[in-house]
Amino acid sequence: MKLATKRLSAAGALAVSAALVLTGCTTGGDDTAASGGDTGNLTVTFLPKNLGNPYFEASSVGGEAAATEFGGTFAEVGPSEATPDAQVSYINTLTQQGVGGIVIAANDPEAICDALNEARDAGTKVVTFDSDTNPECRDLFINQADADGIAKAQIDLIAEQIGGSGEIAILSATANATNQNAWIEKMEEYVGTEYPDITIVETVYGDDDDQTSFDKTAALLQTHPNLKGIVSPTTVGIAAAARYIQTSDFKGKVAVTGLGTPNQMREFVEDGTVTSFALWNPEDLGYLSAFAAQALIAGDITGAEGDTFTAGELGEYTVGADGTVLLGDPFVFDKDNIGDFSF
Ligand code: RAM
Image 1: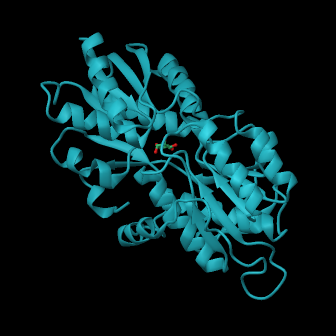
Image 2: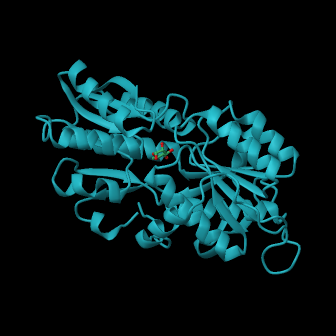
């Protein structure tokens, strides 16, 4: 497995997260940005699941870099809590503002659909990334990696870390998150077929909130005294679980893995709390998503299967089935390589 590393930049992440405007009233921009031709309204606003999550700060770094490259205007807005209702009010505001494109990670596959379709009816292009909606209510989904591959990577890691047998639990994000639910279903299937001696005893939800995830970790360990491992397919959850384990008697006895960012997980890998975990490059995901929005706005693509577009320095991408574009493969981080990454 490899990781596209063209867009790694911790310094850029800090600069942009400090500069991001979070109020929802800054997109503005002229309708004919870019190089003077009829490129459409290249005001692109990112709407992540929630703010304050380093994963989405990284994807916005990529989004802003892309917008700068194609001569558009970038903004980020979003709720502090990862709920669909909060996203709907931001979508409505962006529709009223007439932004060219909304790039959104959905907190629910259906609940934000009506608002997104109103935006589309008003001429805004909608790209989902990270967590999809029903395909009926967006123009494209930028998928970070194939769900089977994401599930397999995490289960193979935990299986290796617990010696191939025993009880494990899943600490997820929000209960309605499209992406986590798809991955959990695949993880259950994969454990069922490949690891008969491993049992998933419970799935709990930390809501992509650090404290809730920390508390759910404590509760899992209390409820399941034989637990050997926790898989957390969310960057918020895995970091909170690792922090709990780090200072508890469970360190060295209960394994933690899942999907994390190298910057958040570094200390836990370096002190041995965590052996390895997986992810893709969220900066690249944001970069690709912004370029997809630009291609839709400019009319270069409609989102139909077989459409192709160029995403700056990441190169050419082709739209696959169901209006989905695939970024690449998940990548495994461990103590030997984590020093090479900064996001
Ligand atoms: C969290 C979010 C996001 C997910 C990553 C892995 O940051 O839940 O949706 O893709 O984890």
